[in-house]
Image (cartoon, rainbow, N blue to C red; front, side):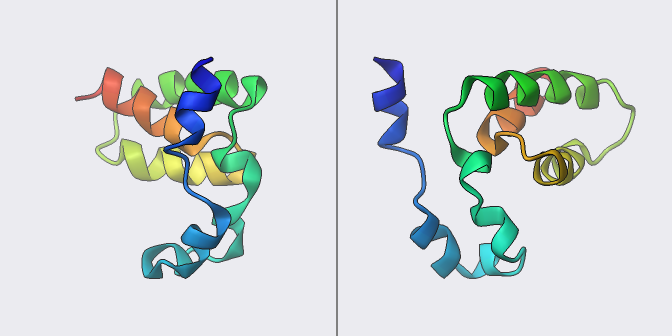
Length: 87
């Protein structure tokens, strides 16, 4: 199953809390919904990533990260969508 394959590469909450660059973002970045493999979070992140990709701004990844944290969408799916549509 692909879900088990992707769980090997998913960061743990402890690993996120101990890295210095995620500590700057606070405890909200370690929310399980941002990194989980939930079907609704992935599809919502993909849709939001497609919508953000067509906004004519130079900061797509930053805007995508902020949107994912506010709406609690899957961060890897959001970043992958933005990098796929805006190389």
